[in-house]
Length: 414
Image (tube, rainbow, N blue to C red; front, side, top):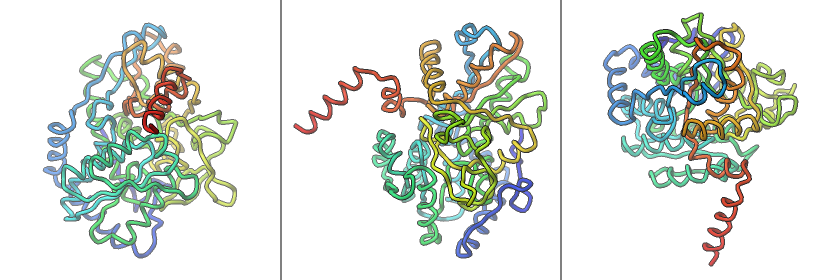
């Protein structure tokens, strides 16, 4: 267990920092002080664990994938079921923790960015429970492809603002959220959704997500009597990966594998592989220093992924550090491999992983047969796939789904 991951003066070696406008310095100092005070209070962590137990179905179980194990004939495959978390993904861990922190700071309004929409739904849920006003920024492209999540955010009382600038995806939503915060910092907290951004966000998000790794390490030992050989997690910004990896960082015998969005192939520029390709380079953007997909002049490139939650130009500075030290191996899974892995998981195990999570499944499936029957691999199913029904049905070219959509559209026009 490594809940105590800490930056040194805001950095993880050369990565991290807080490159923020002067007007936000006091807000960040206050946030850092509040977080440190809470982290040093044992009752705070216990109150968080109690809340997640009573409100969010924790601890989430680990499932032995017997049929998939038989399919590949190599390692035993186990799955950490974050899809069973309230709101359907690991995102609730972070937002409920930050919600407790917002109450502790006495603020009344929360804002957030979202790509796949799961963080937006989780933030809107937290705001409804705690009685906060809530605004969610979401790229216009992601609004279109994640309409079901937009629907639920609005039902939960959040104002959803489509961002029409730039590539109209996650990075642009983050920019808009920061603009809002600059003008409303006295009563507003920015619930950043991943382990990125200026210090202390990478450290703080990892702290709350570490509940995944704490549970997973204990559970796999109880189930099998030993640690896994490999642990797989998808990597967008990096919150679910840091959550799971934190439980095994101190176990040198456990290989940690982060799986990025390979999109249409890392040989193209239509992907979001910052660390698993030669296209990522070190730079500063959105308040922190890490690997970005950028031009030689430091302008951010457009990214692509079938999964909205992985379609991000940067990556956690903690993961960038773990990449440079060799503690985490990074791979990229293509859209095609991801859809195939999702289809296989649904048919073989009756589980429906999110497209984001399916990246981790795809890489684990590609490697499972290389291991022996005594080896164990653990995959983080960071979210459930029902949010992706439009994207998945389109990717599968399902004619009945197309007919259903046409009939619905005609009914509305009538």
